[in-house]
Length: 348
Image 1 (cartoon, rainbow, N blue to C red):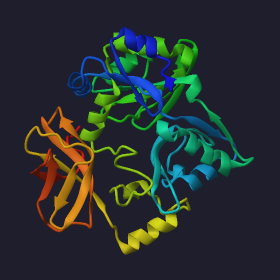
Image 2: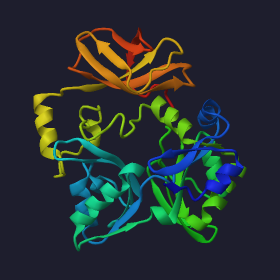
Image 3: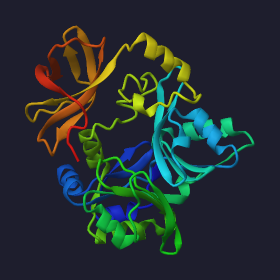
Image 4: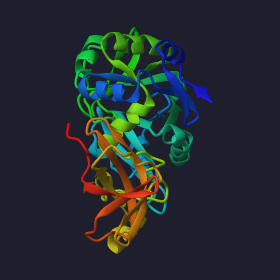
């Protein structure tokens, strides 16, 4: 198990730690709802150093990235970021990924922490002698500052606010700093990487500037309110982006792993599809709860209590695709009517 380089400061701030993806990370500080609402109304800072990140560079970097990922990185100019996916030959999602295009042929590829070595290995194998692949996770700290007041916090601490899905390289405390206007909460803000030796100073400065320290539990409820999928629950190697309602992530004009399978599925139809729902009360749908809609059945992949809506919300797959029937969720042995909605659950 790997511990976050910021463990000492987290313990000093009263964090409860948990194991996630082989890393020991903060689960919560003050409490999930308080941290959730801090991000929705002010600003919060998360340690997300467990997330994967490696640099891909060289004359073949763009070609290799295009071939391995289903979105097309050439649509993102240097200085921009892009959401994309690595698929298998069946079109299933091996991981969903953020790519920072720092220069024309220089990228930071940022997979989920649990898939870091798998995705890095794909690039190493595909690149041969045309690219360099350098893991940077072990040498850096990654934090996310999110919330309506995040721009003011960022201006105070780092001196600028990267635009949405824009990347900026700068310095912090005399050391390199890599930033992007990305995040997993639906709020304004940025993700910031610095060398490990500067991580604690950056985190403390962000807290002192007004960002509440937040754990992974609040990060999960925040992303669910936005309808953002979680790999390993809402996305997996047996589920395609089309079934997940994420066809916009697929660029059909270039060749990539899984393209043929997706083309066939687009023509033949889907065996299952993702639905989002909300309950009328505070009952909480959990991962694994049964779902039904007429003859269609399935299970909840993500579910929790929405602190903003003050009711249960969730997502899950139904198979076969359902007719116009009421949706019901089984919670603790009883079936409850749910309203199907189009994500996000809240508007920002």
